[in-house]
Image (tube, rainbow over all chains, first blue to last red):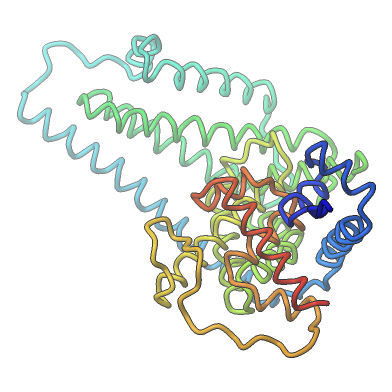
Length: 207
Length: 178
């Protein structure tokens, strides 16, 4: 007499998840123990999903917020230091080289020349696109509360610092990876600023 | 989500992306329970769940500018939370000497295992008796809805690893619950 082979756990779980093989689907229709086991597995999953939820402690946000504030101060300091360092390198370079034969190109001219380069081109064109969006969405910049004003001001300061660092870095010809990093950060900052300006467009609903 | 709620959520996210701390706190309040529960279920203890919650939101605050809005915010935050929880598991297994492989997730626990229960136990207790990796796979698949491929990838393993861990989990639960 042939012994019936019941489905193993893998086969039953595959069936439960709607992925079972044809033979397993056929078997379970005629085999009572396997059908019961399949139902049990459905039941366990439902029970798992219905387990009570735990309540997180309330005070954790203050730790997170304190860390975020610390990082911001560090980042602002680091960015300021980067600008100063670039300026110092530039000053040193000018002293060593002596007066330039012709006036250095304006940063903007350098960026125009760079806009077709493979590594920087996409960042420069995205920057222009975002600056156009900023002009469209904030012809007369306005903010609705002190926090948004602060966020806008931090972002705008950051862009000014980045521009200074970029200008100096382009002038002295620093490592391309540093330039790409600075451009990437400029695009990201502009994107955040555009996001903020876009959020101001409709009536504010969040308080 | 109705349109007002959608505008509200989008505005909150835009402000959070701009670094507005009040908006970031809003995101924290909206998702802290879900993240804490995920951490608690995967890692098993209150302390570890708190660590997952804190690490997750530190990462969210740092990286929310990179969230492009092309998927749900919860989907993105959950991914961060799962990754933090699994990282914590790896760390703890390494610390407790139960880590014997190069991939961070060894199949068998070498440490002391609790004695077998003498009678049926409830699901909550049974869940905590599973090894951390088996429990993580069970929770990620059966409750969070991750596929075996996704779980395998997150654990640096294969889909088959995830399937076998899920089978193991259900075999153990059947023994203990019936």
